[in-house]
Amino acid sequence: MNTTHRPQPGGHHDAILVIDIGGTNVKFGYTVGNRPADYRKLISSESLRAGDAVGALAGMIEIVVAEFGLVPASVVAAIPGYIDTDFDHVLTAANVAGLEGRRVATDLAARIGCPVYLERDSILALMGEMHAGSARGCDDVLGVYFGTGVGGAYVQDGKPFRGGGWSLEIGLMPFMAEGRKLEGLRDDCLEAYASGRALQIIADRYEVPIGEVFRAGANHADLAAELDRFVLFQALAVGVGFAMMSPSTIVLGGGVLDMPGYPRDTLRALIDQYAPVSETRRELDLRWCDHGWVAVLHGAPAVVEEQREVARAAVPRPDIVAAR
Image (cartoon, rainbow, N blue to C red; front, side):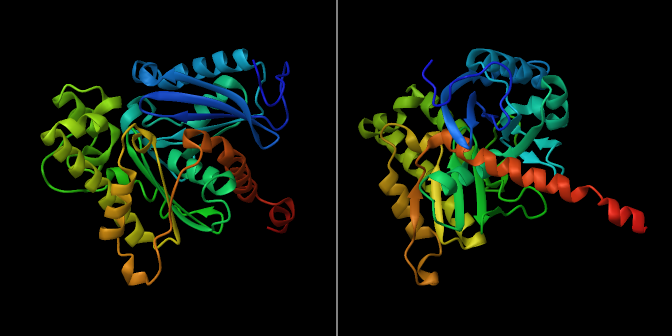
């Protein structure tokens, strides 16, 4: 195996195993010395939907650690859904429902023997783009990601905006009122209109492989019309995020936007049309993700440091305890 950092038996004091849990695949990578190692592995998410999802995830980690040959000092897991303010309890994970209601960080750490830090997938990806990607040097950034689901994140001055805990889960926001349904989601949420799952329904309707659906639209007027509406819905989602957070920079990513034939220029034009940009009297600074899902590797060290700081702050200082 060709790796940036030679695998070592046993552990490494700053090695982080990074897991991006998606609705289609669970993606694995390492950072060592705050740099991504040249190791990637994808495993189908299906086993997380059958039985004990945390146990299945622990089994995947065992495979990855044995394959790469390096025991991590910590694990960072990107969760596609709502995480409670304790960074442990997964409230909702619509595309990986087996994680819902579980204290995933606590349970998984007990199984694998090292600290586990959870973060929303969109925050982790955006932090990565700000540290080493298209948003490097920016300090006021909105990220919107169109994959199996739809995620959003906002980072200002290096700190993720969390609101009351799980802000900008825009995939689950109310959207339209056409009665659209996706299994595991409330009716008429954005994901039913602008996600990879919604796109799969369109592809199935026209009996087109999902990977070819945008190219196929060039030869099928009805399909083209549905795809135009799909891209419009995506633009409206970005416009909502822009209006809510007033970012200086927008970063767009996710597997849907990387598909062959996806009309990025059309999406950009629609965002410019529908987002309240002219009112700000500045140009729309819209950028595309440089790193795809690998951005989470670049963001992981910042997440570990942030959550360690939170943990340290929660421990009473001995001098204060004594004074009481």
